[in-house]
Length: 233
Ligand SMILES: Nc1ncnc2c1ncn2[C@@H]1O[C@H](COP(=O)(O)OP(=O)(O)O)[C@@H](O)[C@H]1O
Ligand SMILES: [Mg+2]
Image 1: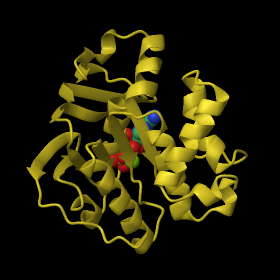
Image 2: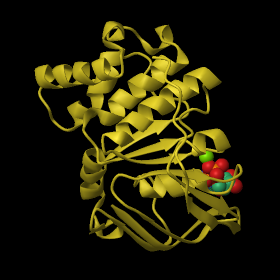
Image 3: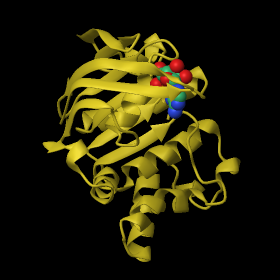
């Protein structure tokens, strides 16, 4: 699914620079569920954003589904990103003046899908996350867990091959975190490849592999026995 080799990334800070990723090598196969761990500031989000084509590395290679990412034009990269990748964030990143259905339908609009078709597909995905009855509610009328489920439905609307999640349970209480993890595990059971940043051990143990970052390098990369999240929904 993806191969990364000798990836480096620095951020300029005044006259100097901060070397955040210092030669990352990482391969992920289709169907995996991987946790990226590390303390705050260790470069987890930077790595995930590069994998998600939201940011570019300074050097190294990144091949996604057989395609060398740095060879793509900006326009091609955007099309590829919309088709291939789904994102979930800690803070949900929903559009607050659009209702749940419109939020889920938005990526389909960017793909040029007709209104009726995208509304039907968005409704199908809202049903899958158990929120059909909340389709016409605004984000502010939803709980944190419901907002994250809308975000998951949105991430899945365009049927991406790879789902990227940056601290998806970071803003949720334990029970709700486990509900969201149960849902993500179910997606992985159905074959979706998942890459998730977390700094919580119990969340990481709900994945199948843990990659640990420290000071810009991978210090550990191990398969783990997956702990199943308790399902309350
Ligand atoms: N756009 C940026 N400009 C400058 N420094 C940044 C930027 N993004 C992140 N950093 C710095 O890079 C380091 C790694 O950040 P990040 O990847 O967000 O870490 P993590 O997600 O593991 O907490 C941190 O020290 C952070 O302050
Ligand atoms: Mg982060």
